[in-house]
Image (tube, rainbow, N blue to C red; front, side, top):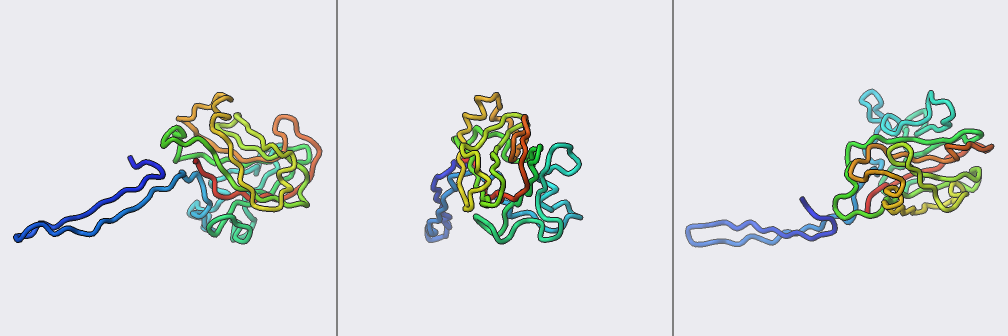
Length: 207
């Protein structure tokens, strides 16, 4: 297994009748993070199950969950307000006596103890016209960590949020078996009066 943030070298030599001919030395360096979702693989082909809202399950048909992932018409993913690459996830929310969240079921990575990772990082971009609303991340359904800024949804710039994995472990999450990742706004256990808005999520990874 390759280690994170490590440099590897290799060379191929040819054995000839006159002796060994050394080949050039090749090298590469592995990344210092593990991608959870960079939102680049989603397409507008919902018939093939590739739309963003087919992986990130929003509040459609769920009482009390006022979230919508992506846009109603293609392109479904956001392609202008982007942190890295060419797409981000728009999370459109209504938190008037509701919460709003979207959940990704993980195929990989599920073991968050490998490679020495210690931090879950995501980037978000709010808007000053959004209602003042908490932003939260949950693992395996109920282990919720909330951003320190109660008005995180109003931050009108790409903002990095680093969450120590220990914070989830302290809430009882088995980090070797992470099945779902949820991003949400509002207060899930005690919904408050609020309004509607949009927040963008991008470049979720383990560092």
